[in-house]
Length: 307
Image (cartoon, rainbow, N blue to C red; front, top):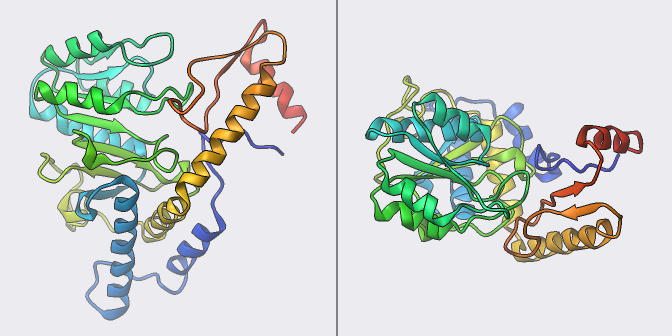
């Protein structure tokens, strides 16, 4: 099989599996326990936290492990909604984890995008100035690969004192991320998008940003998300972050080369059009195409017959 659905999930990297295996077997101890074996497990959790922080340009203390991107986004949205009145502002093309959460929390505001999938600047500015309780956007769109001008959108929100959540699920491990270089309060990451396992991710919470826990119990994760940590998943997330960080520029450059080769070949087929931007101002792992007079479901199952 030739696998073309890496935005849905990536295969587990061998090194990542090796990193998590000991915590499924002999190193099964609860990291909150006080004895020596457990303390070593706690050290592994903190090493993973530091690796993730390095990938995101953050402090380790700003990383809260979650079950994935959806939980992280929900946590941030609920925090922003509880801080002030007004709905959560999102982009019309955002993932359902953002769109549906914004609507569930009240009168969410939706900002349109242009033909290239980028936020319409004057609409975004108007939304930020209109009394929203917070804003959120996907830096890289999971279907088109459109990259938002994240620094500008965050700065626009900050100018109006509006907290910002950044969905970087399709960015982490794909483009350079420096959260401290932008006016970001919260951000969501999911491990299985860059060769980690499913069911583990994290929430970035800027130091000093308000946060009220949704889960109470043993006080894990600095008291922000109680519950015994998913240690195998955490170790795997840390290893995935460290692995993707090595020779990062070369890896990303290679992905852009593969992307351009695909575009060059597919556009030779009559009736095929590439949607949106295709160079370095788009995500390296995504190509969106329109195939004239062919339904996407039909094309999917036709390709499936060929593996």
